[in-house]
Length: 356
Ligand code: EPU
Image 1 (cartoon, protein in one colour):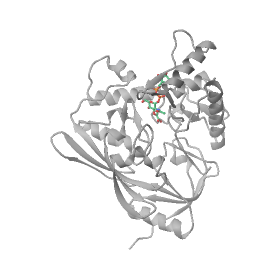
Image 2 (image 1 turned 90 degrees about the vertical axis):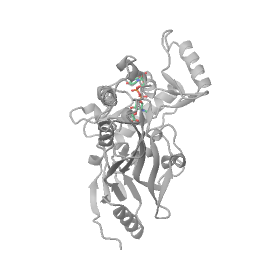
Image 3 (image 1 turned 90 degrees about the horizontal axis):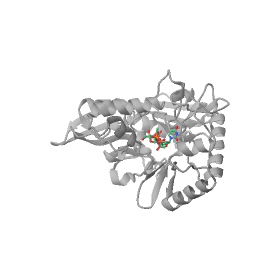
Image 4 (image 1 turned 60 degrees about the vertical axis):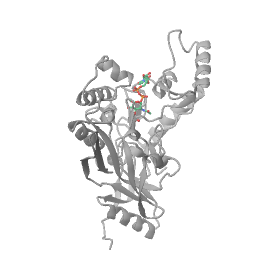
């Protein structure tokens, strides 16, 4: 028998997001059990309401009009670390757990695999959706499987790593099976006393070729992120963001070469400069979107009304005060148009837009 769970009305969504922008949800359920999630979907079906599933709120932009349906906030808690064999720990973690608390516990237990993902805001359930990655590591490297509710059948399924279809900032959860699944828990496999992954230039520079401990790696990532206002801090107005607002665009090497030639020809790239990019395979590279944004005329600290660009990282759009979602969107569009005009590249937003 399914119990009755309390559905709240007219709940402001802005405070539940790191950007702090947007209107109210007509109906809202904080779901602390899988049963509550099922109840929420039943309630929505009976009342003919759309459902939006909210996690940690660190990668969403809520519209000023809010959301006319039911918002189910996944507040499932619980984590279990269990030794699997000589080298491996199994970690099962409920979707509503704070991601960074989980990373901290893994480091405390000397478990390797997610150390570079320190300081990332949001909850565990969001990590497989956009295949969270930073400083050369992605969650797809340690995710064993993801336990989900299939919204179309009401059944609970376990998806293996392969079934999740991970790539840069992508999985089936935000592409082919968008809104089909609700992540309930994630099963990670972590390495006992493994060496930290130091492949990102910022980290290599920090440690100057020395191999650090997992704890030192976490501390370095936290310091690097904080210096870029990429760690949520109430005392740092530049951290009132959804992290990177755009993905780093993936282009062919041919396009990159041509861009390089054109920029030099028109004097927009000096002899000693290069377009900052990172090779991802034999024929593609990711270009630093932050650089494109700056070169398209938006300096760090740029402001347009109450929306702005972080003074410490030009890829983060920030709420400078009482910004409305419309102001954030206007700035986003201005940036996209300028980058497109200047470089012929379409910047794709990273956050999820809700209620637009
Ligand atoms: N850059 C600038 N201006 C800036 C910042 C960066 O021109 O203000 C250029 C520089 O050339 C720099 C390059 O961009 O070398 C890369 O910068 P950074 O190392 O800060 O990384 P990013 O590509 O801007 C990505 C992720 C971040 C992640 C970092 C570290 C995306 C969209 N973003 O940013 O993830 O923390 O790498 O790995 O892939 C997020 O997704 O929300 C996020 C914060």
